Image 1: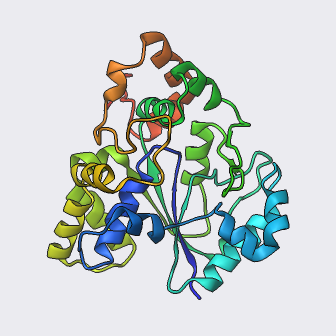
Image 2 (image 1 turned 90 degrees about the vertical axis):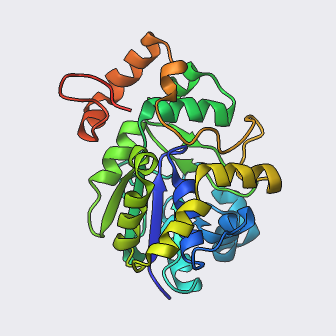
Length: 282
């Protein structure tokens, strides 16, 4: 039994990239398949965990809105069942809409929170879910925003982008590391070295370099084309789209940018996405 390492992020912020690095690093830097990536980090809303705790009928009931205390039992089950310190991916808000903490801190070892400029997040979000930019702006500005239950997933509460980031950044009771997507793009060696250090994975430079190369966007895109990727949305051409930042400048209108910045501005400034002069970085 070991406590959980959470890989948390708002959707389309770089969670999969971090998972790709870790699965390659933990396998001696060797090049792993997309299937290995899917199997490496557990999903906190996956059917298998809820069925193990509550059975098939219990899972079906829990697919409806209102998943609450059951989450804590599932987290405890994951920590008890999987060896070592299981890495668990989540897009969930650290707090539910009622303000209650949504994660079982008794079985939490630490958390890595990956954040990305919301201007790019919303563009990628729209592509992934096959909706318009304006629909995404409205959705990510609503406290009720969620990922609906699916055949093999229970519902997941997101809330607004700003509350998601603020709640994770201000969370307490366990060690946590903040990773900016843009820093991963600009200097992957430094970003992933810091991650390996935070998780106490050792400092083998050759292993690190191999893992970074195996997790590069070029490599992941090639693997997706060759092997497919289960997490690709039917609404988008590919999961691994660009692997850069600033693409929002080619897509968003000035009015859309203004709406996003007006709503998320304070958190964007705190994270360095808006300078003291009011300029947008990245």
